[in-house]
Length: 129
Image (cartoon, rainbow, N blue to C red; front, side):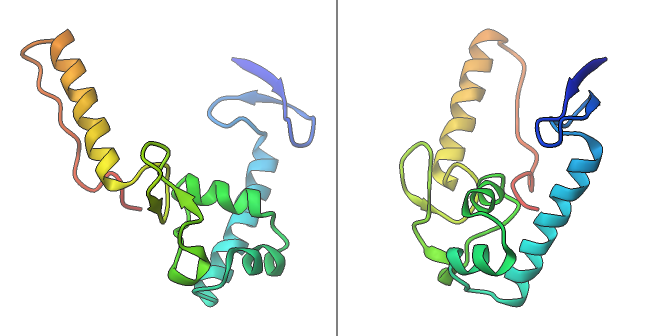
């Protein structure tokens, strides 16, 4: 069991799957839900407006986008997020669809070289939430 201080509140907690304590995790989820609700009620709002109206930092909203929990709509700022591999504008996550396919192929090829005869594949729908 890994015990640590929560970097957000400082309390000791048993770090199992989250880097923050359970109470802070619940508070973080409430913040996310506030942003999500605003975006659902105000589609196409610019990123800065979402941040101002929800009182949530642009940095935190960008993390939600990078984590794939939110998706950029046309008014939110096309080009705000870029693929970590090729730089192409994306609406969520870290990589564009083309780079995801390429990375998956590279992993599959590398795995096939290490373990000949074992077939790898991805499950359909893994990228959708």
